[in-house]
Image (tube, rainbow over all chains, first blue to last red; front, top):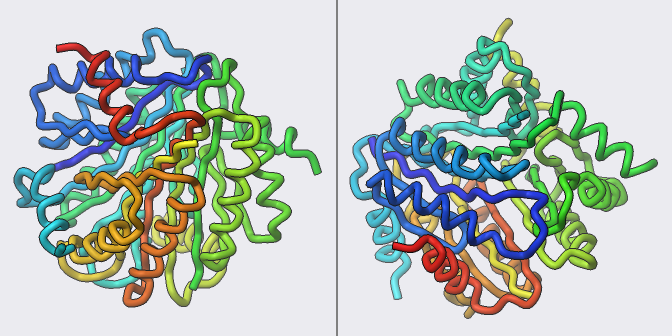
Length: 100
Length: 100
Length: 100
Length: 100
């Protein structure tokens, strides 16, 4: 079973336009997990077993709720039996079929 | 801390247009949890402590992955310190401010 | 074709914990449209033809970007041929199948 | 104003585990638009003016609803005044702050 979780996390109600310091802290949590991940402009995808990816989501939440009174998250899950290396294979499969 | 999680869960790759039998199984899992919830046309919102609501999300996932080769989930989280009865208060607050 | 769009819209980078004044302005735009809608704790669902529901999403965006430097939206779309009164029928169908 | 829209689109109720042929058709629509985009494992991000990115979302919807009885979409919008090249700058900003 390959589970890919794509998620965004950020504080709400903090003045100022930049959220990147908070996203960077979540990214550091993801890196420490050792799971495969891909950082994107609107979210980060991580891949692994269900329990492992959700443990990372949990750790990211706890990282931010320490000093954020309000935290927003958006999570998409695509869990598919028998898939491997889905972070790469999903993109490659689409590119091949899209043609030039 | 009141955490509201709104989530949708359904199988992908199953023939037939109706997903409601799967959503109903997830709803039964939610009911058993004893947490406050609100069923909507596009997702179900549940409210509680972070660990408790995520345990329900986890249980719903395991309910469906038993017989679904591919499962899709969409989860929105709004976690706010000091809020109570957010399922009701968020809607009431908007209605009041919207006026007639 | 019944298209149901569930969406959340709020400013980012505004100090203060309450987003309800902004959500209320979006709700007023939705009401003016005359489309069926259902306000929930984590988003509002509206139903209609694709072009009509997306025109409402567009109007809500323009309502907020007037005075918000940064706007975040989350939109889920479920478009199904032949469905009618989906806002009600989707919920009823799940409740029936969930049993007591 | 830089608007980044990250979206996923796929049919529901089609038998078979692979959605990539449908995603590839949407990708071809995106390419034709000439807008900056980034294909990811869980969605594609496109950047431009609000009306332009939403026109692409509209065209992708119409591409799939031709032969799909049910279409699901998930759309995240981050619209920020004064930002340029957000697809790159958002990721770079996070990487810098995350450190090694």
